[in-house]
Length: 285
Ligand code: ADP
Image (cartoon, rainbow, N blue to C red; front, side, top):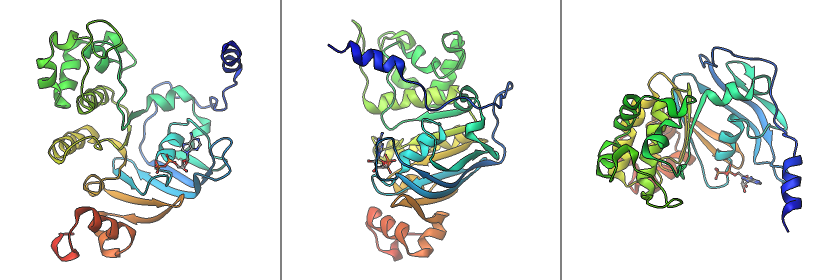
């Protein structure tokens, strides 16, 4: 019944293709990333998800993107990974248009942590090692180091066969984990993979505030010397960023540090006070 769907799928031509510039030694990020007047609508959508967006991610800094549901935050991440190309404007990586780069070079230079962690129905060690191109050839010491950095060693020690425990329920004998535990393994995978750009889409949404505090400490270690974009609803996460952008109605409406945005008494400040449920006088800037 569905064979024609399969053949339509196999006949699809990729809309996003390789650019001419190859980076044999790997793509570094020394200046930063710039969204320059970017307008983008999803295929078959009549409304743009982003409209004339201008955004800068300075190299070596943590940038947070906050805003209501549907504002276009995840779309920014998708354009950065080149899952789509914008209809207008450009996304520049150290001044180079993403479309000029080879896709493999670009994606090798990015680590993406999703809100819903990717669950590989494989062993714990494989779940961590798959962050690297070398994949299963990663030495066990490096896997253990990454697990430790992510705070996953206690969880792994409790599992019946430690690093060799089969995870997920697809195969007989597999052990399932909670969302927070899968998130820890995803974080370990990110530690192993030393990409210059990290993108985190709602990384702490499934955590309580204790776990979030521990996680943020580890996150600071993870991003040392790298560039990070954190997409979040949580102002307690956003406030730790070097620069915060507020996205609303498909465009940036405010930007600055936490203190600058509070002093502005605009959208960010209003949402911050609403979320922490305090009056301005009670909250240190
Ligand atoms: P946010 O991350 O801020 O919640 P998104 O970037 O996910 O917002 O979405 C921005 C807009 O694009 C929304 O109107 C959403 O419905 C739309 N959108 C998101 N993904 C798709 C898609 N794959 N196809 C069509 N429209 C989409």
